[in-house]
Length: 326
Image: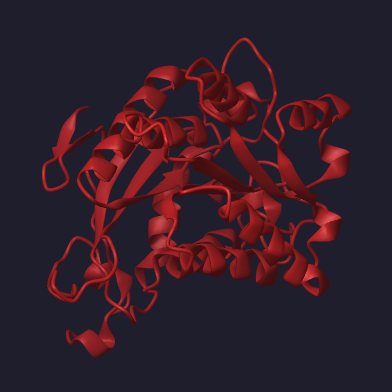
């Protein structure tokens, strides 16, 4: 434990793994992720770069999913995401570093979330945009806590959370889990005297109890249910995102892969019977990436144990690739 990702100035539990994949050549025209990550060889020079460097950070955790009575296996998500990213082509080089993993052992979730928050805050302080690879959706509490710590001395900065998810994850419970992160965040924001700005795309009405809808309404949560998010409703979905972005200065985008239909994303803790089409989720990601307000991303709930032909991992990798803009 405690390996130092010195080039990024943070402490991680497990250093970055070796990247590998298809090799067509060494020149920039042949570039793929595995050749580019952790290398400045093809990165644009500082004077020509218009994008912050990206830092990948794994959160290898199943503890929250287990507490929430879900299918465990998400702790293997970070490495599966790296594997799916490895052979994707790079077209617009942007510095990308792999910072390694925060590892949750057994039921030690709270301490893992503290370490994740410290790492995210450290990456932001270093001038990078963190992309956290989950892990169950308990990842969100650590991710947001790091972003909030980074802006703690700037109380006028309006931080918003956009969650692409079939679930509100607003449960009230004695202990944190993959079902509680946004209620826990709401409590923290209230304690700090800050507004809780939270929007969700893809809510499955049959999979969220009336108590959760009441909680969302009480907290002023904006949301679209999955039936409002078909391909024919794309313009309305983008308008929803546009209006939410107008109310915030910094955006935390969290993607729970169970927002997608089970046929597209079978490898998740709670597969969706309905879901939001990939083309809609992809369009939202592209719009957010182009907004200039994206400060933090995480992608969660990939469960490789239940994936089919790495379908879910490959889909997630495509979304990450779009968000980073490479």
